Length: 304
Ligand code: FDA
Image (tube, rainbow, N blue to C red; front, side, top):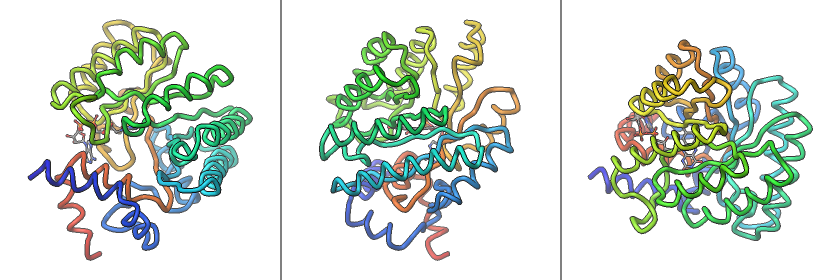
């Protein structure tokens, strides 16, 4: 039953028609628990609040399905506006983005041009941009683009997913260019040909790749709500004497807020991923797929 629901959420999240419908009707079904709002103003307001609670942020203007060059350019402009709004408001946040929203599926050149204009803007404001990792079909091209961008920019980072068999080797290669990485378990539905099918295998590899990157000496964003993994990483970091400027913990907006608070109180650097915008549906479906128990939460909100 749980697998069925997971698959249904993953399917809906990728469906362009349903995504278009959701865009038209606005944040529904309790999605505002996970999405800071549809406007940039709302998102900046949410970051202000997080900063007051001692948390840093990374803002993400939601968007994954772009079908034309115009849409991709518009998406890049939204990223630039987000960086400008961060600078103007003085909130402590960097930017996360998905390259498919910048035209990756249309052409690599278009995506590269958009990435360069966003990174130029970030550099002007002394800010940093993280490239989210999407499904496996975009993995190699994302790595290629990242390697190319790193030649000209030191304010860009990438995400690596523990569920992929290839990740250990990718981290080894990325270590050569001193990459700043966010390490996650992985949120997409992947074939067992490319990804560990069992949760325990993913969790084990997650611990492995975090340790691997920390020991390589490059900046590691440990992105998880898993209390066991977080506790293990805290003792690993302490045991190895790794200093606080080499890593941070990251969590998603609206998830495990008690754990977020606890880490802040313990003095750890904590960054919250804050998504906002009209294209909230795909993101929302991935959060439900991660935890089908959330479906009760949706049902409760259905008639609100
Ligand atoms: P796990 O799934 O084992 O969950 C541990 C516990 O956390 C659960 O028992 C529950 O208490 C809580 N929890 C987790 N998910 C929840 C949810 N949706 N609702 C309510 N509670 C929940 N993935 C990707 O493929 N590419 C990317 O670029 C990113 N980026 C990213 C940024 C940040 C800051 C985070 C925290 C995560 C991502 N992810 C991601 C998502 C990631 O791959 C993964 O799917 C989720 O973080 C869930 O995995 P956990 O490590 O939290 O563990």
